[in-house]
Length: 70
Image: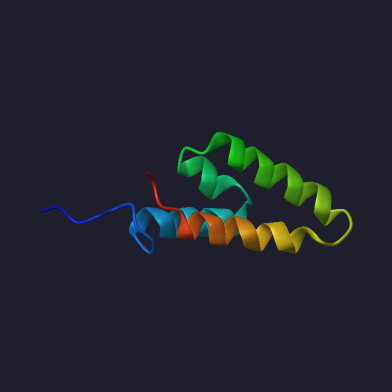
């Protein structure tokens, strides 16, 4: 029986969450979710113009941390 390496709190998700903390969308890109990564990066960049980018930035980190592969 091998340990589950794709569940919440596993090493891959922690690394992805840290990556998204520094660059929104990078964690999703690491997880292989290209469209979600592009959405997070572009939306965050646009919203930072009106000082609301922190919302998407935080969402990006949480999404990467809580991701469960199917």
